[in-house]
Image 1 (tube, rainbow, N blue to C red):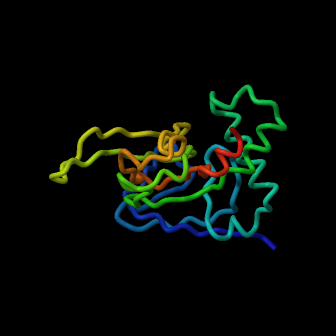
Image 2: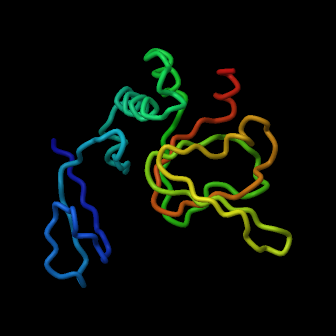
Length: 173
């Protein structure tokens, strides 16, 4: 059968460059369409995870990795092997990815969205705020050296990240 997805998008909704017609900007827009996969902009949801095979998800991940300068020159076989070690995760806007002081168990590659990295001092004040976006990597230092996280990470937008665990990373080195 046909897999159909329904998203409810709370307005305000950007109408410029949008294929969807919006009549009343004060209403909630409901969009129904067939899911189309673009490896750089796809969105995961429960139905997509069930409908796509492991091989398809690994191929998508391999295509994503190939777009990043860090992995662009890897041979296809090595890229496919590396793609198997990553897992895709979705975080909602405002969701914490990790806290300062947590064990460094993984590194993250951002496919879509932005992540806010910040440090809190003893009084709870935030400092050293930086934003990472699509194609950026974060959390790699703690994953490599095994020390606690030096900062916290929170999803500034809805994001999709590819996660490589410290164990998988160590097995590759």
